[in-house]
Amino acid sequence: MRSFITSLLLLVQMAALAQFKEIAAGKSFQEPEDGFARIIQMKNGYTVLAVIDLKKGIDIKIYDEKHKQKIAKNIRPKFGRVKAGQVEAMFEAKGNVVILVNEVQEKVPVLHRLVIDGLKGNIINEETIGQLKKLNMGQGYAMAFGGVAPPDFYAQKDPNSDQYAVAMFNSFESDRSKRVELVMYDGDNKEIARAFYKSPEEKYKYINYMDMAFVGSTVYCLGYARNTRASGGKENTVIMAELKAGDTDVKLTELKFTHDQDLKKGMLRYNAANNKIMLLAFAPYKNSNGQGELWLFHMDPLKLDTKKHDEISPMAIQKKASEVFGRREKFTGTPVNMFVYKDGSYTVALEEIRQVTHSSTPSSFGGTGNTGASTTYSRTYTIVEHLGLMHYDAGSKLVNSWYLPKDHYMWSAHPPTFYHRQREGRAVLLNDGDQYKTFTLVRSKGKEYVLYNDVEENDKRIEKGKDPQQVKGLKACDAFYFPLEKEMIPARTFLFGEGEGRKDHRLALLPISDFNEDQNIFVTLRLDIHQAKQVHLVWMEL
Image (cartoon, rainbow, N blue to C red; front, side, top):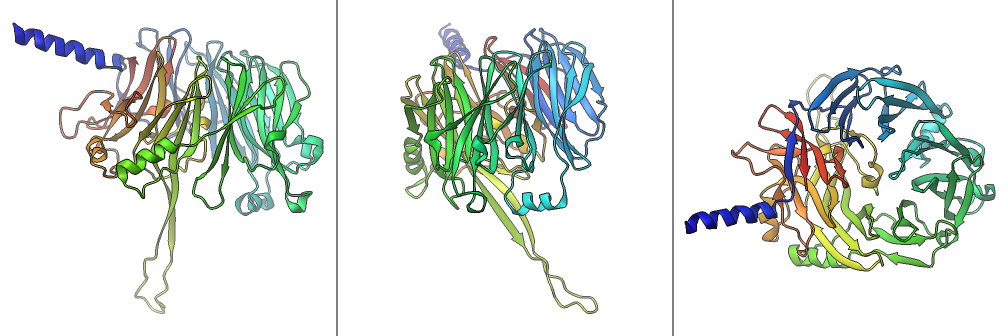
């Protein structure tokens, strides 16, 4: 009897410790390996999975509020076979799914909008909503060798409404005041505002897009403006544009506190708890391989001035890295995202990202007239290593820091500064398995969790002060979650439970996942490696 009670108590304790509880799983299907993908939990309780192949159409699956599959079909947009393009955004608006696709048609960058019925999966409407100037050979050289940013489109959905904005960036426009155009749409996909992002007094030759954020019915667009000695004097600044419904002109403010600070990289968040726009700005050191100064500015949306700013420094994380791996080990994290919560607190995420170029020179021998010449081949790949997280309360006081050692080898992806922020609201590229090598952070009931795929043995390696085993292939990997609690190096737990056999491993396609904070449900795509690469959607409750 005592043994039975002990076992029962143990089960109760294990159940209490379990954080991610599976509540449903969809039918299995073959793993998608090409194109772009994203999962959306709709407001009506439905779930939509879209795998977007720009040449073969869109495979769409729709599940009802009980997680039963209702629709599985392939739809073919009219714009047809896209030779080179990407998905700029995918989100819900008025119960439908909106997809924005950017491509180059005969050297002309264009932006297509596709509206899909959220219940039936049919195409409701598609049209081209943006077009930039045709590119020529000289501009191609300027982008490749002159450091000129390529023309592009950017999109941002308001997290608190169905409105969204598009920024059209035309880097080769001769008129300095027509380089960036902002357009705002409502939930019915109707244009409600359009205006050019003018250069302040037309004194800056170059303007680069940085980020957008919504505050109520106003979208704020951040840009980096600069000159060179040859174009009117070497100076730079960060500028903010404001556009709201009905506007035909953009209100432009030069952020004086950024003048001549080389803040080339930055992201925006709106903190509704204290009504502040937060600018996380990064000034990289020259030839630093991702290192630099990181500043957080808190701005009043009405004045866009700042009386308070914080330098974000991962000192505690650096100290922990040295304790675990030796005195020479340093944490050289690059900012990748900032998460702002309803209570006004926020978490800053940094990852170590470094690019490595591998060169090889195979010799050539034999054959008439062969001189023994050889050709050198070079290949650049990216290593994404240790993750550092710093959580601040609503008063900007550092509350906790966490250090998660890892080592992921990217075959083709080259994630830049703030890449994690940039992928929000977008369908994720499925590319050489690299899509499985990134982290996700969710917050439920005031508690944060990090999730990523890794090899199990890294837990013991880290405990012994050994570097984590590098993840290149995925056959020995599993999905883990890490509760961010008191311990600076969080303990790991299998997301889907431990496999029964040596080859029984389960991955999560985390970057396409979706978390509904109100319903407290996390949905992701699970890959069973040992079952001929079969995948299925899994709904989990926290």
